[in-house]
Image (cartoon, rainbow, N blue to C red):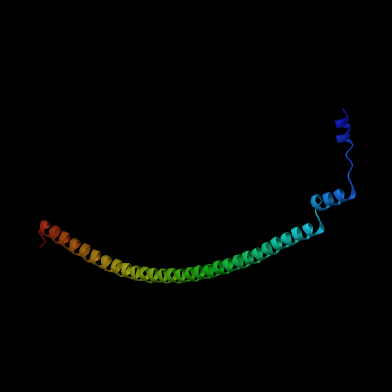
Length: 132
C-alpha cells in the first residue's frame, strides 16, 4: 500500500514543470508559424480568385464577341430575307400583269369565238329557212 501512496502523491519540481510547459504547451513561435501558413494559404486563394475573375471576364468578353458576330449574321440574314421578299413582290407584280394581259386576250378570243358561233348558227338558221 505504500507504493500506491507514493505514486499518487507525485511531486513535480520546477524544472519538470518548465520542460512540460515548453514541450507540451505550444509556444508563440508555433502559433506564428501556423498563422504564417494560413496567411500563405489566404494569399494563394486570393491569387486564385483574381485569376478566376480574370478568366471569367475574358470568357464574358469572348461570349460578347460571339454575340456580336451572331447579331451581324442575323442582320445579314434579315437583309437577305428583305431581298427575297422584294424579289417575290416583283415576280408577283409581273405575274399579275401577265394575268391581266392574258385575261384580256382570253376575253377577246372568247368574244370572237362566240361571234363566229353566232354567225354560223345564224347562217345555218337562214339556210334552214331557205333564205340563203
